[in-house]
Length: 140
Image 1 (cartoon, rainbow, N blue to C red):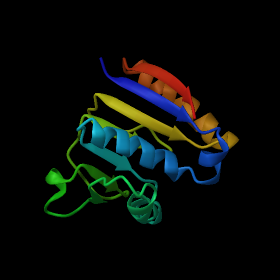
Image 2: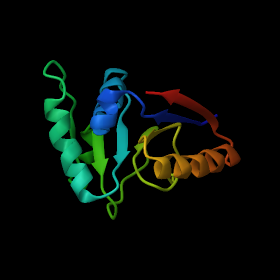
Image 3: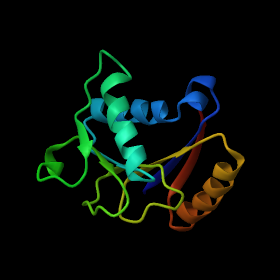
Image 4: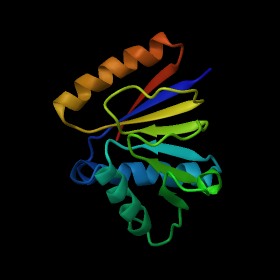
């Protein structure tokens, strides 16, 4: 059964820089040898995440790139801005305001502390549950 995990940002470290949580999730995925897609809201967010993945942990190396190159299939973590099509992977980290389309075993929804973000996440929660996903919440 597919699973959707909602990570609600609450800790000061992640409130100040929400993309740090995304880096931590990508690091865990890579350590577990799970290729991941990260659906970014826009190209600027994808570029910011690309830079942060190089710098957030000096002891970690997470192979990643912006999607759209010939070697996408060999890259552990693909950062996908809107408008770029990629094949589905078992693990998806969603930063967009709408539910992720496609076939995924596990979706990680990163939700900022902003009240508007929380309201949108409630709608996505209902959508995933309606599709038969097991849905969980984690306060981060």
